[in-house]
Length: 184
Image (cartoon, rainbow, N blue to C red; front, side, top):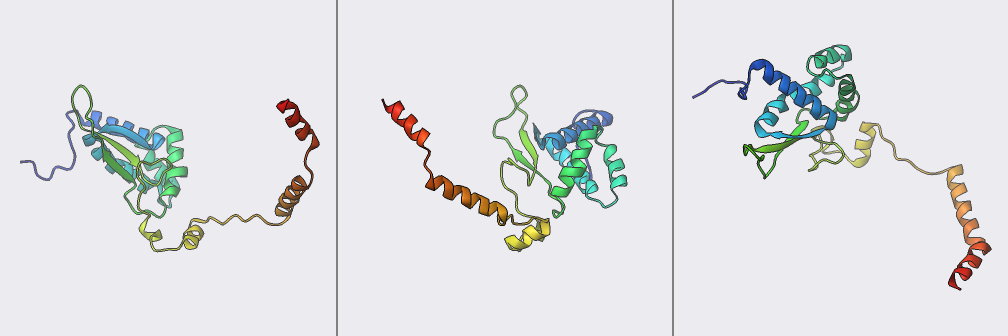
């Protein structure tokens, strides 16, 4: 009986396992959803959540250097720092979700799973809002996120209204003639 074992061995050497996990995390950050085995997804979930938490820290230079140890591709690092970290600013953990697939992999019948980031466009199932935003009204949430309601007024609105009035008053004679010719 194994006790106090922190990680899965996955049947490979330590160096191979960490190289595989780094590669999976890079692909997850780049594509935001990947399909892998359940064991790899569970092992990778820890690392994926830790790098998001690291990217959210206020000392961005130190955070980028820490992330550089795991993610080697520059555009993936930039996506992590500029897209994913601000997206999860109000969420305190729980950035990823694992959904088990019904059909096992052909060949070895390994259980497969989808691991994805929550709160992203096109996600399979919508996530619960972060606890900081759960009991707020829509106006308060938009103010906290820095979003404003866009209202159309001023010269743009008057131009739109005048264009609509002109189009209602003046029917186009050429279009009427064309429709009569088409009927013949």
